[in-house]
Image: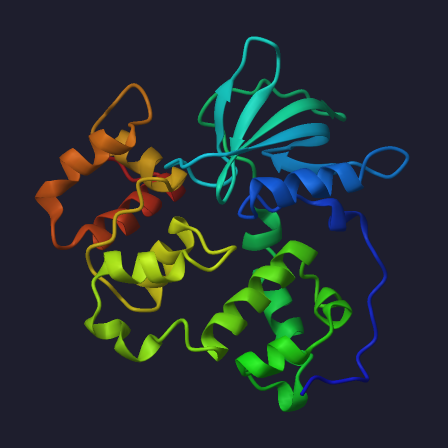
Length: 267
């Protein structure tokens, strides 16, 4: 049961922030909803903020991490990876800081990396006694209440999708410890809003699986490039081929690659 006495916070400009882990169609709809005269949807890349006016969703399987600039096209548009495909950005502009886009660049996940704990705490605070909710609690909660915690409408749908999947027993976690990584991947990605990268993080950090190697994660790819002294960020096939020597402990190497990118370690 949720706390009915919580008040809704005032809308802020951050509500236009794009979460690239959403589906391409949901991001496209967010951009359409924030067309002029409203403030445009936006995403940050380093010190620059890019405002997006128009886009086209492309549903296709990729191995890129959400938020990564996949390709610059000759017509001046560019492709960005999303949860379930690509978004072609047709019209955009920046303010104050000029930026030259290039393949491999990554839009910041500030609304996730900087605010995840805050949003999580607000979400838990919506429920009685600040207890972690059951799937039924989540399904019973009105969308506006969840939105008041800072969760976007598409994310609310995905959270409710997950809750419904667990409630109707289409997902059975009791046997997860006996299932292979592949079986868990196939089971969880059936849920709309749950992509391969999300499941890989679940396998690594929740189930503590030792042999997960997320080749679509930009941090892992950059660390891999540094480690092997490559000129370009490697593709999926190259990474899997070279990573065979680390089986069955590729999770550890992925963590090292993240550390390499975040620090001044030299190999």
